[in-house]
Length: 78
Image (cartoon, rainbow, N blue to C red; front, side, top):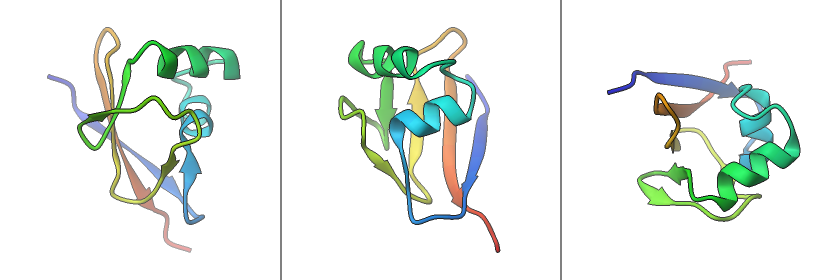
């Protein structure tokens, strides 16, 4: 079981590929696309195949990596 990390955003949303790169889960855009295309990403408990899925505060992202990773998007206070 993995612990949940948080990722604060100060905009309305961040797209999935941007999130994967910003957190360091993916080193490149190509690597981020591969993670999505291979079905390793779930958003709010559902498999996510849309690379540009908009992630908003309170969304939960689960990654089928080794070890697994769980993230929650939070609103950053300004």
